[in-house]
Amino acid sequence: MLLNYVMIAKEALETKAELELATTKSQFQKLLHSFQPDMVHLFGAWSWQNAVAAFQASRCGVRYVVTPFCQLEPWVMQTRHWHEKMPKRLLFQKRLLTKAYAIISMSDSERTGISRLGWNQRIEVVENPQTTTAITAEEMGHQLIAIYRKVLDSNLMERMQPATIQAIPCLIKVGLTSNGNWLSEEEKRSCSQLSLEEWDKLLLYSQQEHFFNTILTGTKILQLHVPEVNIEERPCYYPDHLKDHRTDMGDYSLRLDDANIIRHLKTIIRQAKKNQLTIHDIIEYAYALYHASLTEDKLQEKLRNEDMTKDTASIMAVLQQLTDMDEGMMPLVPSASRLSKKVLRNIQNHLAI
Image 1: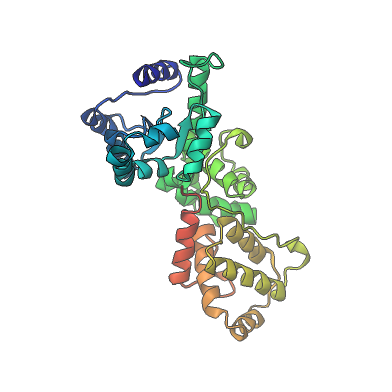
Image 2: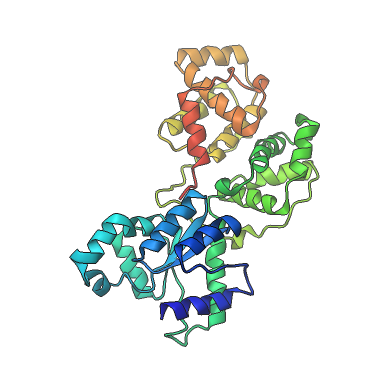
């Protein structure tokens, strides 16, 4: 029945995506390197071949989803529990499901059972057209494609090309300053040469991290032709632990003086030390510095009196890296430190599953 389901799914998907089917370990290894899939769909929950395939895919940076095919039902879990299920669970099965980008169940009751295991809460429901008339094979194919798209639209920083990642600070800088002259001709040319696929990733990532308008402003000022992305209809998976730690600092234009810049900086440093700082927070602070009326000598003295010099220099290093801000716009010279490296690493992995 499982093989029949896989063949029905394959037939339903063939007109919607380019795909290959592997039924052995050697077939999968060859396809992983020759076909270079965007993602892998594994069927079944107890096969060691699936565990090996998941490991190989992950090692190559390929995401995978799993359809357990009702093999996690309580009665199945208890069958040959000590002689088969428990050893497999300890050796590979739990890790296989925990690391999956999504688990595709076939009913609400199966989803509830999988959820109770506590291994992975990214659970979708796609009914089986073999066992119900509530869904057709064609509809199943559309639902699977939507899940694949959701997987590929998650943690986009991981999937971006280096040139796209390098373009982000440039676009942020132009978006914050409303001035394309800040960029060199080489930087402008690099931004203009991004492919439509990379623009799609960049724009969607900026929406997920709450700085889409800044990027959009930058593209308009640079007169770049970018694809239209319907970001409202592009769901993705977020880490289970992720919380929105953005701090509303109010209307900057009303109170951009030394005291409020320092108060905002204290918030930034506190968030950084709690591993809660996001790229949105950094962009908000960069905006404040670009538009503030500061007395540099007095501000530096206040930072020394508050014993904030070292931490401030670390945050300036983060600003420089993520927003391409020039030193002349900063209250202190940026200085890379353990704190700045930790912040950059956390921001890079903020949406990692």
